[in-house]
Image (cartoon, rainbow, N blue to C red):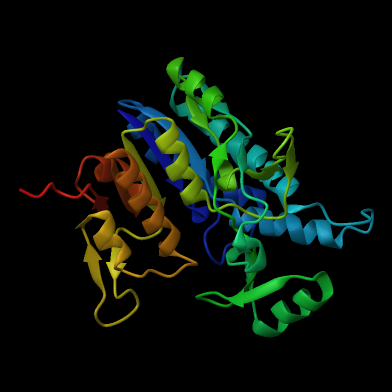
Length: 307
């Protein structure tokens, strides 16, 4: 079975942790344990979030006196793909001896006129107090918004249209390679309508929506979205909170989940199932193997035919 695994941004850096390299290296062990168990039996493609990492690089770039202007988000996104990909390759190479593993910097084409550029919603970077966030917004020209635990920077998150390197990923898979790609949703680029030339753009594409698109293009059988909760919950954070163990795309969408957290994951799972007839699931990183085998998580399945 061909499985595309989408790792949440918390996989390498949990909320409240210092963004030190050693912290992220330590967290990678849980990730590789989850991936390795599935890789023994299936073809695997791994994507990952980069919200904490790209936010850190953006702050460092803005504060660097040697730069005449901060690095744009597309180049910072490429840097995070390289860093996180390197960490994953090193550890997976140790736990999967003899299995080829490759990390590929990939680019995601978005529309230059996507309305998301006018309404930033994607949270990146660390959590700040309201006062600090507003100070940074004034000084650095950021947009900020309130997250569940504080205030964070928000950036444009346009809809992914296609992944430039899909055919390269497919060839690597066909050769038996475990591929790490489309990190942080892929480097966001626009394509010239005449020449097709690619240009970077100031955005961070949602990694779950990119994962769903890539899974569709690769004809994956299963889209596995891993996060820090064991299930999708209806009424999350209220006395009516209940785990959702099984849902169709329509049922999942009726949950009206928050745009800054479970919303993109639910939409990505729904899109993949609708467009391919395959299965998707959302659940906890540590239960990845159990989720694929139907013992944990929220399974998203096609609508049953009527009559």
